Amino acid sequence: MAEFRMPALGADMETGKVAQWLVKPGDRVARGDIVAVVETQKGAIDVEIFASGVIQQLLVPEGSEVPVGTVLALVDGATPTAATAPLTQPGVPAASPVPAPSAPSTAAATPAVPPASPVAPPVVPPRVRASPAARRLAAELGVDLATVTGTRLDGAVTLDDVRAAAAAGAAPAAAAAPDAGDRAAAMRAAIATAMARSKREIPHYYLGTEIDLGRALGWLEEANRRRSIGERLLPAVLLLKATALAVREVPEVNGFWVDGAFRPSTPVHLGVAISLPHGGLVAPAIHDADGLSLDALMAALRDLVERARSGRLRGSEVTDSTITVTNLGDQGVGTVYGVIYPPQVALVGFGAVRQRPWAVDGLLGVRPIVGATLSADHRASVGHRGARFLAAIDHLLQEPEKL
Image 1 (cartoon, rainbow, N blue to C red):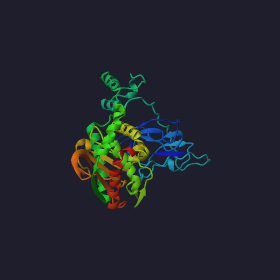
Image 2 (cartoon, helix red, strand yellow; image 1 turned 135 degrees about the vertical axis):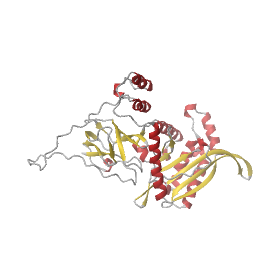
Image 3 (cartoon, helix red, strand yellow; image 1 turned 120 degrees about the vertical axis):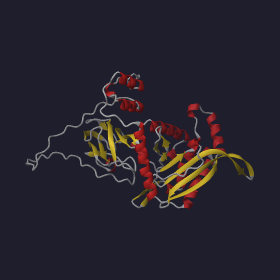
Image 4 (cartoon, rainbow, N blue to C red; image 1 turned 135 degrees about the horizontal axis):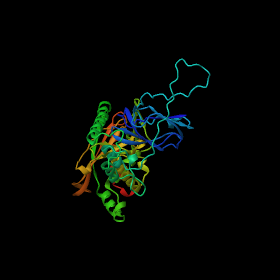
């Protein structure tokens, strides 16, 4: 019998609320299946299970908020291994788990205390097909989605369906979600907690450089001419791919500081800072970014941004980042020096691409220049290695056809 526990979905997470179960007792699951939606200060996260077997019992009902490490469900037929341990971010200790109920003894002994009446597992209603936006609107309007008939061809509930149900006096939901202002305030508080820890515990050092993107943008323009509008690449993809490949040359910036030592990561799971509509920020991971083609990386980026802004991220995407990239160029910022998200050891920042006077082979001209910065943990690397990392990004962007 394996235990499925409340995962730690961030360095600052102490508790989580089981917003919805997507399985019920008797369902067969495989490792990686999404089995629950957990609400945190940073939004609702789809949580995967790290064991295969049959759901034996759901121990925490929907709507309950419990500490990280609490046993949420029991999975029968799964062998307890490292894969079935609580999903935690590296370096984030799980809270003391709440023990699962012991199986009743078959011995004919009289217990000192009369056993409590058995509690039936919670009844899990079937999952209603609805977009995250429709779910949020239903919570705000007090509409029970189980009472709404979806009008899409696949039976999914739309925003108009929710509004119509609210106007018709549909049954209120058990509990309304906090308004957007409360959610934004909670997310800012969570971000502030993580950043305060970062500045308190991590000895940052900062490096900056400027990179000529003339060749990269020229190559990109030519490549996009042969593509349909929907298949065109954005300049940000070149920056992400160059960063992921540069990690191979300077692996000290890729990994975690855990238990007083640097734990390097072989995979490059690139965290991408994404702003949210209500003012929050998340940095989910694009897994194995160094091995993706530019087209695959572009598709992954579009998908990640869309799901982040609609509240459909997976737990592994929230916890797996090994190095993070933030790009504020679209806001006109020339230089950004970020704060490392613990327990990571580095963050790369890119600013706006600007036309600047620039000398090439002794001749002065105007070139597209981007500011690139590195915020790094001095316990894991030194300035010389950090400088080499930025130089590697620059070199890679001068040969865009090889990315």
